[in-house]
Length: 129
Ligand SMILES: [Zn+2]
Ligand SMILES: [Zn+2]
Image (tube, rainbow, N blue to C red; front, top):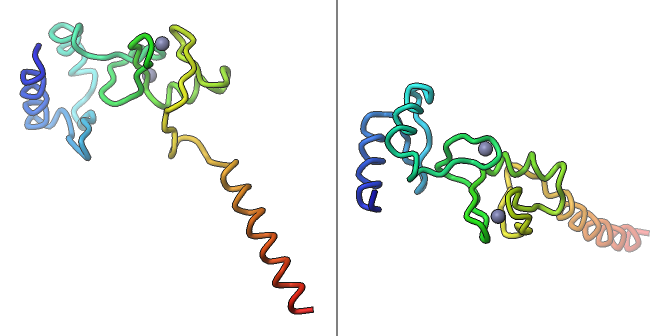
């Protein structure tokens, strides 16, 4: 399947309300995934990416830079709870440039900000006294 063919196919899926196109990414539509899966698998299996961790079809996720393995971000997030730093589960390459914002909380950043605020507020208190 060429890139243009793939785009035609995805556009057709959007027209049939099977996929939703938003912000440059395709999402599964309201129509059931189970209805689509056999069709996808039979026709496009070799052209579709599947998540290495949960084996489900993936439209938007993270690709390992070393071995071309794909993962859902949330699967990768779950995986890092047992494996830190974040590594490709297939080839053990450390994955550093993944954006888990919205999935991960930035507690480190928040702490830095708080300490800055504390220092300046101390100054203000001293001036008052
Ligand atoms: Zn997954
Ligand atoms: Zn890898």
